Amino acid sequence: MSLRNQLKGTGVAIVTPFKQDFSVDFEALGNLIDFIINNGVNYIISLGTTGETPVLDKQEKIDIINFTYEKVNNRVPVIVGVGGNNTQALVKDLEQYPLSKATAVLSASPYYSKPSQEGIFQHYKTLAKASPKPILIYNVPGRTGRNVSAATTTRLANEVENIAGIKEASDDMNQCMQILRDRPEHFLIVSGDDGLILPQLACGMDGVISVAANCFPKDFSNMIQLGLKGDFEAARKIHYKLLNAYDLLFVENNPAGVKGFLYELGLIQNVLRLPVVPLSNAIQEKVKTFLKNY
Image 1 (cartoon, rainbow, N blue to C red):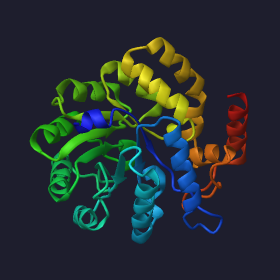
Image 2: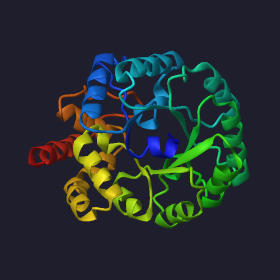
Image 3: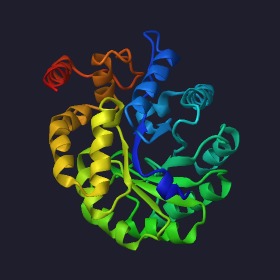
Image 4: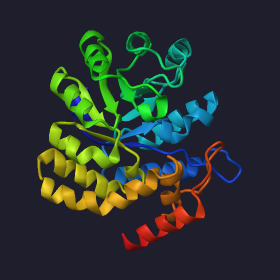
């Protein structure tokens, strides 16, 4: 099965739960994995940026990857996040991290450095050569400070063998449509924008790597499946039911928003590592109210 078929639908960029002493809460992580798989998600992203990867050390990352494989137990594919702005360090990570059971590697484009489009191309070409698994580009310019252009994405898709797809979170519908128009047949294109995925499905996207599906896995997965089948009338009902939640998830910070929701659902403790802090009391009250009415 091609990666494009295998990863059609809803992927979840899963959070990393912490205990009150800020250590990784593996029990809560296991419960969350069961919760999202049992409610219909198609695959899991371990160590995406929603998992607070900038504040995890290397051993914690390896432990989380191995725990996730064990808990998922082949029920759904697992993608591992390996991204950053030090290309050579990432090459070493790709050699050293336990990736044998991963379906693919999701790699956010280099942040802060603001490389040129040629620099971005060479970065991903280097990672693709080093990676034992297919690479998915992650374009999120709102966080990295540099957009991966449609032309660069298409060039990578056509010229670099081990580049298999993209999580496109540019918030730019025109750019999304350019990539969809020009992609090779095998190339997976999923959204990284929960609030835009419904119109993006209409344009031809293959699915989404979602934050919201941590806390609304059943409804969100149903909406994606309806959209993929072309039943946009039914999908719209779920989309508008979730619309205010999308705002609350991202109004202050991701993953502070999603952790606030998961805390109210009783799935995790509301603990984040600095520099990220929990939602303000005013927003947390809005989260409570939303869930009460939901």
